[in-house]
Image (tube, rainbow, N blue to C red; front, side, top):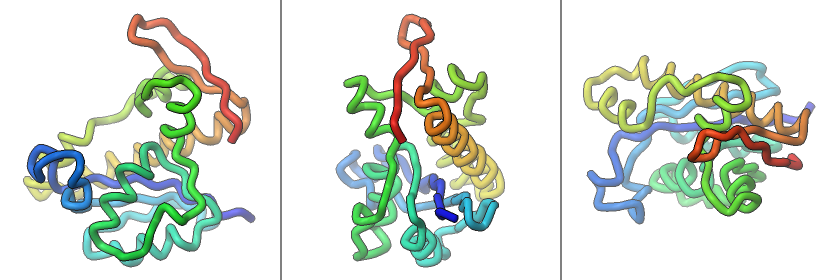
Length: 177
């Protein structure tokens, strides 16, 4: 059985707090979540567990995420010398951006495809971290991983996803993963 690992993380700080988006490595991970098809379940990682998280990603046959290459991997590069871009990865945002020539959010795809919405957003997770509310971050991040998994599986099964454009029209985009 192929081990697909769905992955997302949240950070301790915002880009504004570290001096800009060119310093993503300085954002520091608050919580990371994976779902492994081999394991058939989720795993939640705190900052102290980053080495274990990286090992799980290295063991994956495929890592699937949304903006994982430019964001999540870059955050983890603050903890390791291993080049995570070497991992077999499907970054759905990258594929969709190449096809559409503009960025979509995971939320817009999940809402148009399934009628589901994210439960919060990254800046809220940073506030929760500052308040020590790691359980809320873990729940939010698990839900984002679930949405990532649903979007990937739907695209693989139906070869298309839906999204709403800025005028509210529901459109489709073909995918080949």
